[in-house]
Image 1: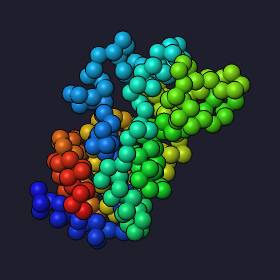
Image 2: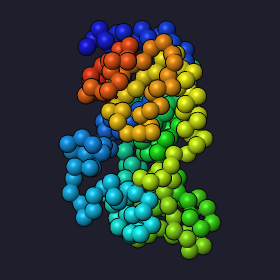
Image 3: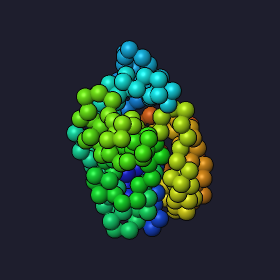
Image 4: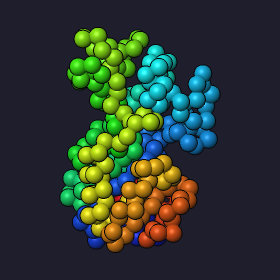
Length: 238
């Protein structure tokens, strides 16, 4: 394992256009639960299946039930960035990391200091009235006792991509451009099974693809380097 981390260090030293593509595993070491592991949200028991709760149809038809789950399980304000978030921000600060493409909605990359972050699935930090489009911060939504409403009376919706909703076209295009132009793509904390996000890896045309994940992925055979270890362990040694 030490040899692999040394190899990763060498690849980072030799690269000047790095992109990091991350999933839920980036934030689990901050204490935020993932979705698909044995202890993840999708394997816990609720009144409704989480996949159903986090859908556009459910939000529209059962808004009160949606917000009960959302306030309890999706509030990332109490969490802090971990070593992976911090190291990525440092790599951006010295000019090596050009962009982060993330499937997470917790805002921890920005909290760590990263500037160029493409949030494929949106962010809990942004919320808008469905009627007048007025912006509301996450504190307003998470501190509400019922369905959060705007001063105009409209329902406030988190700027997160629910099931049945499409990804933001501009964010998707910027992510593709960043990945296509990278000379080193580091993919971490994702099983690469959720589409369309996982398909972005196919746009990479650079020299080295690095996969860091505790478990194997379908893309391991395409990688220059595969490290089956926690991101915290790897980035603490970079």
